[in-house]
Every structure is written in structure tokens, then in C-alpha cells.
Image (cartoon, rainbow, N blue to C red):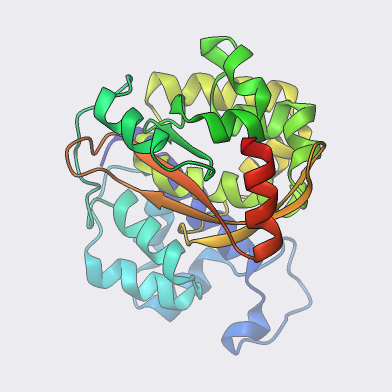
Length: 272
């Protein structure tokens, strides 16, 4: 485990411990609790590990917990499936695949996106920089082409661009989902200079991002419907898909398809 992964694991476990009430694990509430949630010794007892060892884990010390121990902690802290995957990766028990960083858009992938016609599509790097898009996406979000390269990042525009805030029909839910999925993806790479720079900049300008980041919430990506309120064509309900090209695993293609006939007609009008 890297130092940044140990620190993130420590902070994540502590945040989940403080969120779990004693009653949820069958313990009496207790009248002398000075802090919310479970105590470290209670988590250790329920997970079958020593109090000292668990304290070291929450202190970010250089130890290597096994899969069995992390599973016991996941059960004790009642982690979701996405949170369990996250702590396994952070603890080095489910290493993230190592892929070559890719910062440019291959021509053949650009042609693929262009062939999608009225379906908006864009490509992002491992740090969510937007490196390519088709005409349909530029019609959906006209500002993408005018952004400085340093700001052409999906998480950055979601939390800082008023046009994107108006475009997303449920910005509060959608922005939080983007944040939790980003954290789940980059958790083992939080020391990456690009990640550090992006997070630092967002914390400085977005209270909503600061609050969400401090929660340590994570979630896995699932294809889902997302509502857009476009000034030219009105409401669009689009299904969000994410694909990893086999020959460019450092990139992810994001494609929006119409989830209902009205949205299909809206995309056609938008495409002109």
C-alpha cells in the first residue's frame, strides 16, 4: 500500500465507523459516548481483531491487512458492495489494473463517436479530463469546445460551470453521483499529481464538492437514466453508458442514448 492509500483507507474506515450507530450492530447506545458512532474497540471486537491493530489501521500505519480481515471489517461496518471493493483496492487486496495513461484521443475512437449520429458521446482519461467528443455532445453542451484545456474535466465542469448546473435536471443528485464514482475510481491514486491538483482546485471553489469529498462516500458506476434540461429542445431523458476500449484502456467512452421516444426526437432536433 502506498502512503496515500493507507491514509485514505484510514480516513474512510473512520468515517464509516462514526456513521454506524451502536444499535445497528446490537450494542446498547450508552450514555457516556462523546462522539457519534462506534468506538474503535467495538469495531475491533465485532470484527475479531485486536484493538491495537485496528487503531494502527485507522492511523494509517504501514500494515498489510488480509482479504479475510477486510471482509470482516466490511461486514462489521455494514459496507455496501461498492465500499467493500473500495477498501479491498485501497488495502492492496484487489489491485487496480495498471494501464498506460492516455491523454490524447486516437483517431479511430473519434471516428467511432462521430458514427453515433445524434447520440452524444465523449471520452475521458483516468483523471476524467475530456479529450474528445462528437458533434452531438457539442450540441448538448456547447461550452465544451471553448473551455481551456486545464478546465476541460468532467468533474470540474459539473461543479463549476453554471451552464452544466442548469443542463443537469437533478444537479444535486447527479453531481454527488459523479463525485462518489470518481473517488471510487481514483482512490488508490489519490497521490497522483493530476488528482491532487483537481481535488485541491475544486475544494477551493465549490462548497458542494468540499462537503461531498469530506464524506468519503464511494459508489460504483451503473448505467442509469439522466435528465437534461436543454435550452433549445427542452427535457431529455438519456441513458448514460460507459465503455472502455480494448485497445485504449486508459480512456473511457461515455455515450448517451435516448431513453424514450420524446427524447429520441429531441436529440434528432438538436442534431439538426
